[in-house]
Image 1: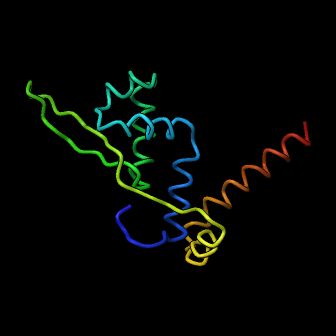
Image 2 (image 1 turned 60 degrees about the vertical axis):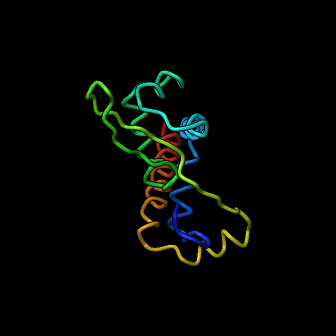
Image 3 (image 1 turned 30 degrees about the vertical axis):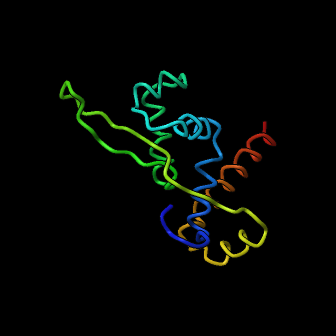
Length: 127
């Protein structure tokens, strides 16, 4: 995150959602030691490259990591990732401030999850 000051509600949701997955938390942990390219990172954390790419995209969209393309000495293009500088203070006041700035764009994901949960409960009750 490059903005100074408290995150908006949408930004905070994106960050918390990105970090709400243990694989993505492990990726941030692995990149904390320095930048790494996808193939090596996949081997180090024991994850397939396609799955790793999905998680890297989520982390990058949240502003937690940054990717860059570089050409190796052999002429091969490689994508490197590194942790972006970020700091969040998660307090009740920070959440309340962020909540006041939530946009309607943030609502569909929540209502979609609620709908899936309700559908699952309904299916269980009819089984």
